[in-house]
Length: 571
Image (cartoon, rainbow, N blue to C red):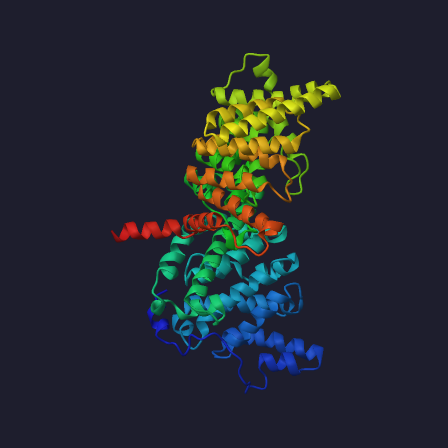
């Protein structure tokens, strides 16, 4: 719709609705506040909902704003859904799409946004509300908004509402009538929305930004910096809710051939909620859902880029680390996909075999061990050969650590354990001396020897040895080895209070490897843990950590690719 410039110049009509004195005795607010008879009140509210789309009243936006607030705070209240609110909202959206003159009049530009948001709030939890909404004809108007008939702001609330409708079994089929188009629209929106928001808002001069966008973003109470920050959050919502809508279809194994397009699966690796939306699993959430299906699992396993993304995420401090681990395990446990990925996955998951309880799941390390060693006997005693010697070595190391060493150490006497402990201490001390004298490679050898002798139950000693070894490999620029050692140290530490030095060392290694998000998440957890410690009291965050966070925040900014793309186009 070509309303941008015309609306932008009309500052009087673009202000967010504010309180006003009512002059209409039969208005919605008078009915809500002043009608004492419940039955008569319901009749009057129902009448308001029926008449609202038919009348051209500048008070409408005030009513919608009030309804929006009620729907947000009381989404399970059955009163308005039972009185025709969904049909009213659907008609108002249609009116905004079909009648541009009406849309640009007074403050009507706000109405489609509020209407779609109200639908989404009331259909979020209650399936019976969702059924009423579907029967009231909300789906087609919402699809029009999803097509981008007004702007990205309305797209955001439309895809949210459609996702809620698709999530209920009783209304899924009503959405699935438009399955192909909805999936294509959701995929396109997820892939392009960050570029759209950047071009249409972030990169636009303040004086040329749509005023109603600014007002909706900040409720009329913010400057440019707050508006941009909120736009970043809303852009993330738009992407994540698009993925949520796709996930509703993937869960039912619908249209997987459409969703599993190679380029889209690769795009998913770059989709995350960001720091503003950390509660959403975003791209990795959809990947795991696909891995729970036969065809989806095969499509994911065929893409090296996606497997490498899952591997990096599985060895990070990201909130969705376990989702990545679970995705890899689902692929490994299937004989048809196992050998497509094992050469890449085995050298990574071997670092996690001592991971304890995580994300509500217990014995995660044991589960990883079982998946890795699922058919190791065919390699150890049979003729099975992997393409990668590194992968075979990782499986052999897993077997030795989790099977053979456990058996051997059960047979060790207390005297032998004491002797081992003393020897490990000496080797560690020698390694430290080598390190401080600048002989880093010798130090690595001493720490490695100590680890090979250190009893498995001496977790604290092994943690320090792995962490020291990670520091050495970091100095030697062996980034992969540094990440591996730091990860093993972190698996041995307390999940509630992870080993700070190991986090910082892995953050640095990921930085050297160019993996900004993984580096950032490790650094954030490091700082969070540091702030809880006694030594942080009365002091600021270490400069080196704040510098790393600043660097990686810039690198992982959700609009970073859009900004680069815009500059290339300008050239």
